[in-house]
Length: 314
Image (cartoon, helix red, strand yellow):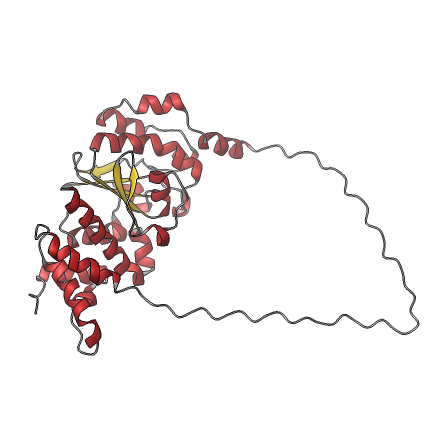
């Protein structure tokens, strides 16, 4: 039997909601081999070589959850129309009058601003592409490129090792991030820290964390396309300065910002993408996992996939 997980790692996996994956269950004899492979993957150090990762890859592919099919909605029944009384005459229905043309609506200032912000400004992008770290963060704090600046408490540039091999990109700051000026704090941040610890990583050590959008959207709504476009030059410059070996997109808006295309997380998982020669892996946002804990096992598979890519890259 594989050695038991350390108390530290066991606590991390319990926090992620993945503890049962690494415990053998007597009632599930058919799944023993898979469970043992996951236990070996979680307990082995990062440098054990490719043998453990290959075993984990086989185990991961055998654990696809099976969901019951959704019940089909009943077909609508056709109701017969009312019977026409005997002897009733055919009456021609009244003719509809042609609609009068309406004047074109005048776009509101807010709509005009949103449309303008969605279009990139080449001169602004070129200027941001020359900034060093100090000037870049100052520019993010002073940015007025979209309407999000009007309600923010402060902009949230990023945090971590500026020469990291791993770079994680979320979608936008939340309420606590807006207060503290650091990405991924609060419950989602604690879950992210546990996810990193499960693969032998730690915030601030060989890891840099940023968001696609640097200011909090009202009520934590999903960032709009124009807001992502306004912040994209800042993210581009952060990636250029860090020069990571791997980018991990946390959630759909982050994936769309990094890959410049429409993305469905379910379809993009387990695939290697590229952005300007840098490998990109797509997975769920920690805030989504807090609302949907049944998908934490899928996020673990994505992290194992990312770790294998890094091992192959050397």
